[in-house]
Image 1: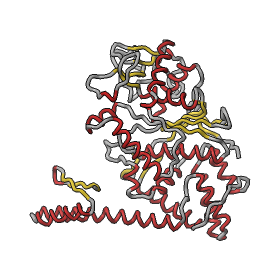
Image 2: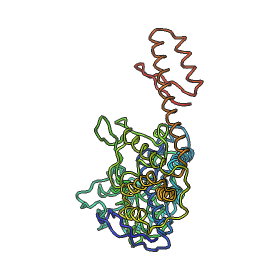
Image 3: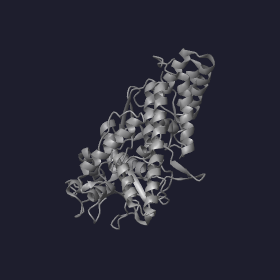
Image 4: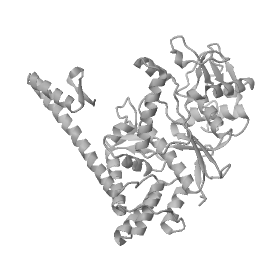
Length: 468
């Protein structure tokens, strides 16, 4: 089945029929993680959304080459490695492994290529040389090499703003030696206090690549100068993706990505109000924090119930609702095996495909699954249950038996009780200290330590805990 997929193309600001450059090889690039900390819920949404797009393209009969990069050199990475007293490679290897653990838990299939920025520095240097030769880049007084934004007439097309309306992006330091505040760095000159593993030799001096150039160099190397789909979170549309277009088109003279796709922001519900997820607001959730409380498939289903371009609001109530809904689907399929193939000519399958072809309208696609589940519950039709399971697996859902899902629910409840029990012991220890019964307080601390729980007493009397 070759699909009649419609994609909302961010650069055109409208839905557009998907017409691949080569139907025998759909080429897709997605901006991945900067690996200096654990992945958060926003990262989970990017990974799940484009995992789904790849699955749907393949289910529609298209071969896909999927690239998702890893940023393993960056100001934050350097700073964290120095703070920890470890090498950059040691830090990034550790968090790449953690990212893979989180992604695997969420049922996210590995990309076909997962290039690390540090492995493509030569390609970045070559692209920078080309831009300098074309007078689209220059070396400033500080030694940095910058892209000359006003020398690229189409700059601002993706963001839809004129040059005068645009400002330098949050991750682009505005140097006094730049020709224009909008110019962005391609190569950062080495600083004396930076570690040796943060520096590369080049014709334009010792230093390291800027953030934007890595995606241009890696995508062109792995997918060609022009490819089908470029994706990422909405926060990357400007300046990162805008800058990618300028660098890539400027260097190659060819068009870059044909379709630009951006998933919506993740927000958090707090006292009935939706607010931006932020560490400063203390409402920041890593994937592994969430997976301590909720089954990973429930989290995936929670993400997929919202259309990818819409805002996704995280709350305990919303995830619990997703859990209950997923449980109803599992109840309908029981321990049935998925159908060996999907017949897209049948009514339910056809409407599911129609929804997915409408810019991956997962809320409608999921509603078709529930219609099927209701019919299975009414008729006990095992063949229909098998068809339901096969369709759900296109979304990366219902890959277990109902029995296995129910056991996971029991495990969730046990984890929740463990946390309640831990807090109860902490409260008892706090009371013992207030009563000056220090031997009892020490005994409770040791009891928790024996259970693998480490306590940390903070100023002001608060006690925090972590698992050893």
